[in-house]
Length: 343
Image (tube, rainbow, N blue to C red; front, side, top):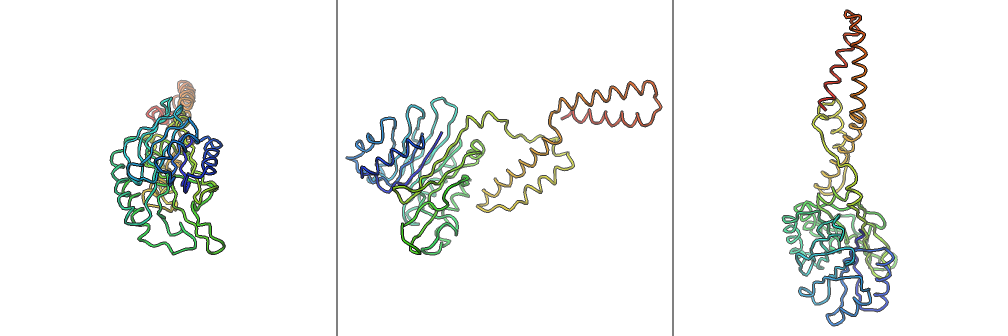
């Protein structure tokens, strides 16, 4: 499934509609959040018809007359059941028609002042307490998160980032991996007058990062907008065919276990506290998978080999029961057999 969010900065001009339709077709988008459409009530049907009949739409006109958020999905492939709307988000559940992928999706378009965005952070925290599936958020949050999220213009102040960062920590969210452009918006100024910032983002809860571990957000060229479209490819179906990581208690008894955990945990990670925890756990997981592959892989084959060796030793001992070397080898093989049978 391919999901996109894009602040199109107005969708009334025929040329904009043509470009957006072309973009959706070219990138094979299945679900899209178009924000700041500025389309009036009496023009909705006309614009949506031009975008194509394969799309169904949910909007938040009951909270904003300017068409702040449109969520569209290809109804032959996907369903989207809306759960909640405000002037700053639309939240619902996405499910593929095959029923193999289901997750909660929130399209966000934050208001333009710190005070006006405060209800958004409260609402997202409330959603976090009710979600029962993997949860993805995408859109224009109209807020930077780190000091390096803006170049030129005014220096990023703590007051700009405090509420957003607090929401992410409280809701247990972390930013998705990304590629392409770093900054998602610019004022199109010339030279030193060009201000660029990263205010468009994709976030996910812990369950999202677990199920869609390989998902990457691509920040593309802005095209006819001043914002980059964010395009995310996620395939839970492919992920489900792999073997999930499991921690087995016997690994804790291995002499290298403590060192593997320490090595994974001391990796230097930048980001929010929750993001650091997730990334460190991933490092520990990778180390434990390597340890498991090295020491515990192909257990049945190893047990068969131990049994064969033990059988040979015991045959020899039957002929020479006082051979001390054979006695030591028998004891060693018996301990190995008991260990791996226990595992």
